[in-house]
Length: 123
Image 1 (tube, rainbow, N blue to C red):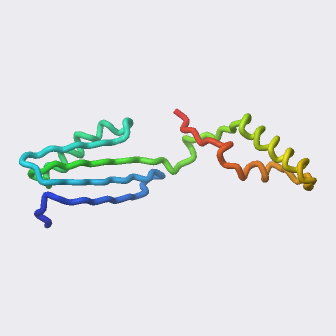
Image 2: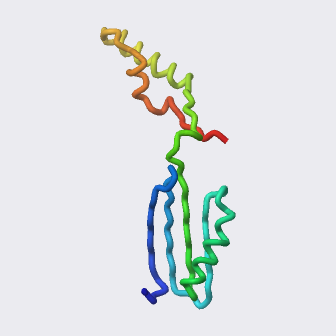
Image 3: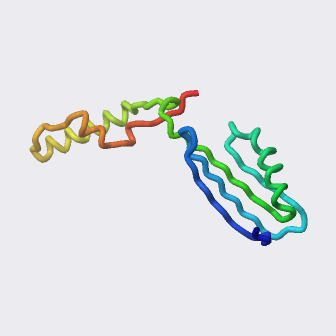
């Protein structure tokens, strides 16, 4: 077991369709001082993390950052920014007319501009 108070660690795992990242930083400190940052929805876990850490760390300043990203598409919805898509289409038609290009503007052409789509979490 390592006995240093200064350290850094990071780990990522995918569990149940969620990517969980945990980063821990510690520095020398006279007392035990824990700062735990979790997503708002997981705030109830902060005390559990603090209790777990205190079993292994007797002193030092410890910063813990936990993030959770959902990889499931069940709770997400794709929104189309119609105004932006319309601007792209108009620009493509202008390009076509200005340079005498063929009229091959299609849905697949416009869908290459990924900023017209926005993924939103369904509450």
